[in-house]
Image (cartoon, rainbow, N blue to C red; front, side, top):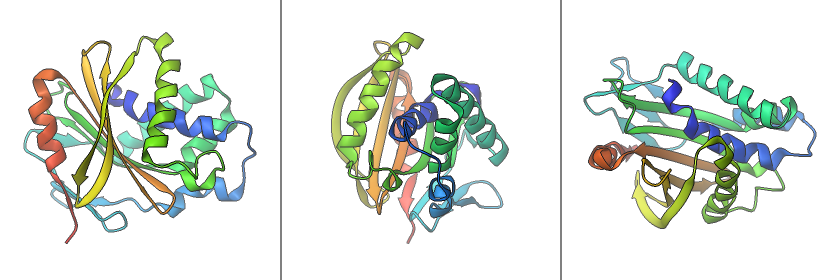
Length: 219
């Protein structure tokens, strides 16, 4: 799952920024309890989350990360964040973020891949008033700080799109002059920012669109 570490890390860096200078509280450490994650069907083909109202049908040729793999990725991200800030900030950031699913091609090529996660931004004074565009603005600042690590994000455009029957704000980014592309779909609901990230190349843009279209609303 190493290829997929970048996307959640970017989003967790935002959570860490909002927590800087705060003290850990019971509310913060239990923040993830306010977010309910979904489950896969027994055959591993259909994902549903009644809490967020999202359903995802896995297209042929893709595989979903297991809970163990998601946990490993989250732990690796926490270590990276801890190196950049401190262990307390990393702990608080992790407490506010929950992963729903992560999918990638079963052939190991890595692209396109998609991550659905949630952050309880309502717990922090620094983030609770942010709307989707404000959240993307803060992410852009984080992207600038990542340039020293060899990752240069350039915003291409912002649009809106209907995903799972609801309107989302989308920030489209080019990575390292188009080596890869990354679309972030944001939707704020009751103090929680729903975050859908799709990373792809020019050659896999159609496949990325297929992944997005596989997300529907639960009827």
